[in-house]
Structures are given as C-alpha cells and as structure tokens.
Image (cartoon, rainbow, N blue to C red; front, side, top):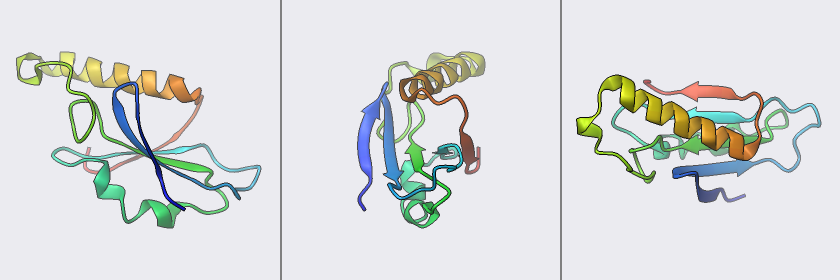
Length: 109
C-alpha cells in the first residue's frame, strides 16, 4: 500500500491507511517530528506500525517546517506567538478530519 500525501489546512500530511483494521481499531495515530526535522523521519517506520488495531497513521510537517506552509516571518514572533500559530493550525487540521481523540506520537519535541 502506498501512502496518501496531501496538504490539509497548510499542513503537509502523509497518511497510511489500513483497510483491514478491526472495527475496534484504536484512535488515529498522529506523528509529529522534532526540531530540525520533518515528517520524513517516520518514512520507514509508518508502514511497519500499521496493523489490525490501527486504522490510520498520519505524519505531519508542523507549520513552518518541511513541506508545510510558512505563513509568518517566524523570526519576528515571540515563542508564545509561534506556539499559538502551531497549535491553531494543528487544531484546524484535526477538525478537518473530525477527530475527537488521537494517539499522539512525538519525536524529540
């Protein structure tokens, strides 16, 4: 199976789906990269993580990183302002998929 790659609310998203997941599959898994990397850090592990208990795994490039949109002049923002932009964009992303709950995987965040 090949991943679906698209832009969702300005966030570069790579999605692996398991069409044979159990009906009781756990919440979707969302992988966020750490500082100085991108969603590609998960490229070799995502296909291995898909199993009967996981229906979807998404790897995201956080706003301003990787292939995601860079809308702001990040160097002119305070930490709080940058944090607000990232959280807001991620919340918009979550809302687009109508996810109530997710399993969040972070690498060096």
